[in-house]
Length: 240
Image (cartoon, rainbow, N blue to C red):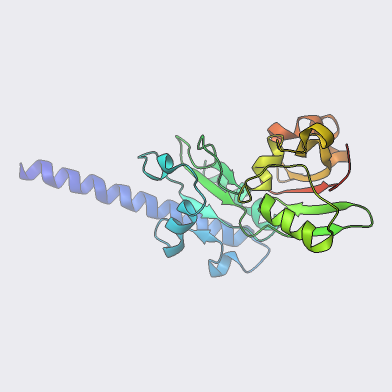
């Protein structure tokens, strides 16, 4: 009995050492490849041992099933502040054989932004949520971490006659909502939210930032291709 107990403890020690080695290697990779100081001060890398890790994992999950599941949790949660930090995450994830999941608002009832059967990282777009509205041109630049509630609020601050055709739940992230079509009550007159997308910045797996012109025919399949940082240009109050 004593032999078996020792054997189990040894396996646990080896496993913990292996995980720690991966952790240190990934953080070092992020630090070396990052053009900013964020990574070096650990401001946007969150590990299972970080106080912020559990809060980030749970705060936006709308389906309690995933909170209570025994499914593997992400090795890291990355909360980038700009495209360069997403690029660094892609580089280091590929080097360490980690899959990438992207979270905008967290209304992912199927768990596609939270679950993976192989080791993975979550890119949480919580810090990429700026909204810039141009009433003269009737357009807006919207970062993917923003919610549709924040979009509606910012439009209302600028104008009493403009709007945007999207959903009703204010906490839904624009990244998932728009890339999935964006069904709303203004559908009959103005179409889906995605029908009103004029342009988008899109980072592919090779760390290239593409727009509508550079994507060409791929743009027509944008709803299925959105990953990483997407910055959409939308036209509130205008029929498509």
